[in-house]
Image (cartoon, rainbow, N blue to C red; front, side, top):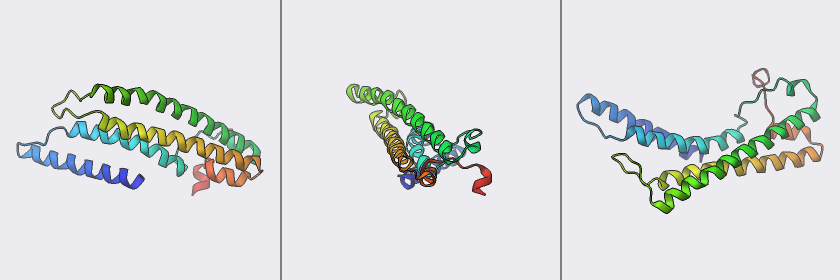
Length: 166
């Protein structure tokens, strides 16, 4: 999915660039701002799950870094628990948006009149995927901590400061 989202963003950037060039000669595709907004919403929802798998989410680890392996595991599990809860709430709140656009056949109030469910469906699916990955990652790390495998747990869900990553 990360590659697909990346390709989508590259195509969107090429589309915007072509529209800018066309504006210089007095023409335009029109709707590039709308389409790029849709692309960013979809890329964000799917990109968050990818960032989770790559340990790319930012954490303030002031306290975490001053504890031992068990303490770091507790902080990591707590952060994953909170992340899973927040992302699940976002996905739950995103469902009515998709449901409404499907049931009402909603269209954007723009010249493109985009069927909004075609944008809301992949956007919603990205949030559901991110929530599922958050909970599965949390459960996997919880099982590792329960087995006393703190190093493996930290490798799966830990936060690494700049000094450690260099």
